[in-house]
Image (cartoon, rainbow, N blue to C red; front, side, top):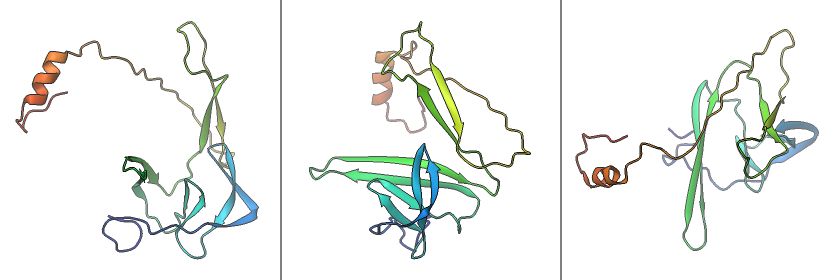
Length: 160
């Protein structure tokens, strides 16, 4: 279901540059922005690659924002993000890696700092929890079984 207009594709028409209030700022992802004014619409282009969307008229639920980039030679890339709109105030947290490096040896300590960027009710206690996931090679991967599964055209069979 498209969020903007009756266009069934959900595509946003060409963006106009945001008109901003230089006396009012917001912090998003560690960057300081002048607050956009949505006098003429629900969205605008704040800068190249930055879409600002007014959520004033959004109802609670999950929204998917998808962007597609197409180069002049025909290459295409898409990326989407799911955003949950809620009536509750949600803490906004920015994580940064202290002393970042492209790769870390297994003996190195990795320090990550979190900064709460949003204004929160000081009477509400926050609880932080961390989860660490490892992305690595699958030791159970079998190349022969994978090729066999690719050649199986049975739509009722699911290979994981």
